[in-house]
Picture 1: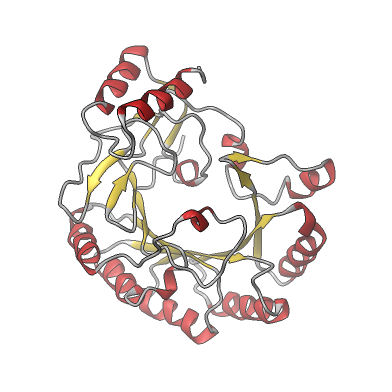
Picture 2: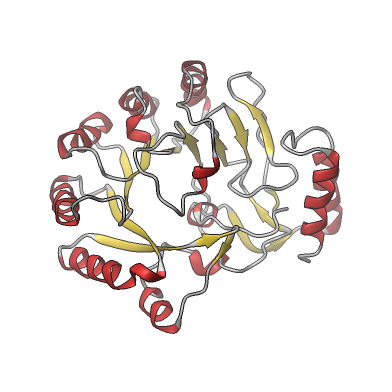
Length: 314
């Protein structure tokens, strides 16, 4: 089993210049950028993370945050590597600025293709191929698209055009009500070898009770400064607020208490200890820990509902 890659994901904005129908952030009425106070708090955190972490800036569309390039510069100056996901809508010179700012420490950039938001697909593909031609060899560049069944033919064409141009292309499985959808046989067969890594390990699978380094060597910072264990709501989820100075990470791996895992991040960073399940006493301690105020998002009643869901997955 590969060792975990210490990392955190930072949602620096809820705002986006796209309006995709399948985007979960469409439900947020109050869309805003990460505040200066939170930005400064994260800057203070960076030197305390030993060994060089992978820091991912996400959104919304992260590149529209007014301090985006400053964030990139501070992250790499602190000895960490950067990755980001963008809809690649900005002009090519602005995207190339990211390469200059990161000075060889851009680990990964993902360009998300949202077919119905792109005005000219040929322009998008041309921009992608030009970026591919100049990016550093050590920087992973991948184009992804959510597979929407009615767009299958168009997405298949894009996949084949980019692959022929030497650009790495991967599909994401559409999620509805926090569940991965099942496509017809033709689509499933086509995307089988073209999915993001580790989708097959978590798709429609319960990892409840599996030991995981999320909360320890991985966490997510929300736009308001709240720090949470991962992308899946569960007991023992909230780690504090970085702006308020209350962040407390786990001291080691803890059992997963989510009803299902719907994000490949933990698997791709080798946080999930597949096959290593927590003993019942550890599960009980994790449940009890959640009562100490680690789930501010839920009242006691809602918490009982959540834990009821979780208990039925075993």
